[in-house]
Length: 375
Image (tube, rainbow, N blue to C red; front, side, top):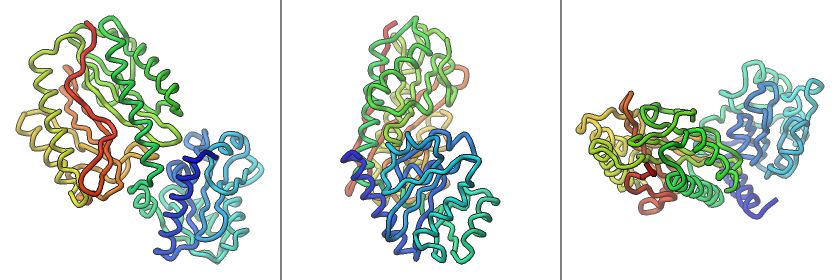
């Protein structure tokens, strides 16, 4: 286990232990892909796509932690997991829920208070777990996991900063290396190659939208050829060591029109005002209001949020929208991303990653003026 992984393990397991003590829990059982990844560091490759291939991170308040996963993916998760022990089950031979129960029982937790993810486990699996541990008290812990993940540990912050910085550099390289005559797919291949060279696990979603396609929210790359005057909207979303990058930039091929420049400059100003409002105690709804009022005044279509938390999932609490008034806290990592989409014409997005600090924020990435590509 590398020094960075050990650091993340110590901090996260310690945080989980303190939460269990505060909430009267004896163990936490993470079963969703995002919470298994957060608690253990491991991401079984088929967990998200084959529902029967359940995995669990078992973290007791005292005693040895353990990752339970399908045996055929043992060689992968063994290198990823930060937990003390690993238990592998045979597909079709063993029921993973009963294996979870057996591991809990083996740790003396048969009659314990167990924090479980009610919204992830199916009704059948929840009933099976409760039946296998009839003396245990199963406690809903979904909101607790969300709360724990909102404030990042120092090792998590380093991991997110690292891959976010790589994504920003790659976006700049795209503008230097491509222009009129290039295709969206060529750009996407370049981004994927550079992302891998930066140590990324892979791209989970890549937006490469040019011309009118830049106004499509999550436009995947196509064979469309870039032309002089096109706007290119690039959003580089992927992971490294299970932690996400999410950095978006907007560029124009050649000289921008007066309208393209005006819209981008307006959003850049809004972006900076939203960033200036970030500090512990600031409400997410107040930050969103800065963006929404500017969009309304300019007569531009707003998006339904202007930011979100970032970590082992792409979008996580806190969300920066008008419906939630979450006070910001030191240690949160956010993406701030003013966006406007002029359907059939062009879209502009500026997205940076930031850390909430004791007296404001620290940028992981910093957008500047409208980026240019060779015409």
